[in-house]
Length: 162
Image (cartoon, rainbow, N blue to C red):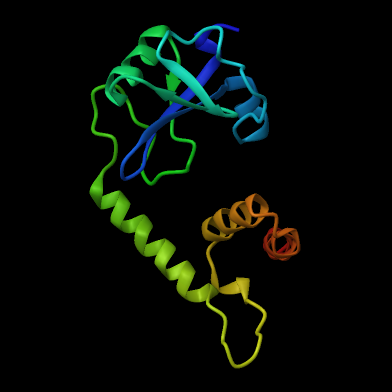
């Protein structure tokens, strides 16, 4: 594979930075990062080291690592693990206003998902927008809560037939 065959994202936590790198063909088909190890090892410049499947660290500054990948021909996108839109070379990583709006949406979703301690109540998905349901379903699948994901899928299917 060539560098042009890969997507990447620079991901930052409070005290560390890492790169998510996955083949375009896999991501475009599956909608997620590849779980195969070492796919980009042959094309990455020195200084990059795989931490886990599709996850790499760089021994220089994150910005230098980002620029190296862009210069190689990899396409930078947002995989959806951080708030914000796809970043483009030369632009700030994220817009604070968009981040605040997404935080409010997540806070609203968290509030709706809280369980009543006195008795168990099934969650009513009818009150959520389709976008929020799709995002929540992805979370349920990622956390292997398949029964809950199936309930969300059923709600989405019922909306399509209306």
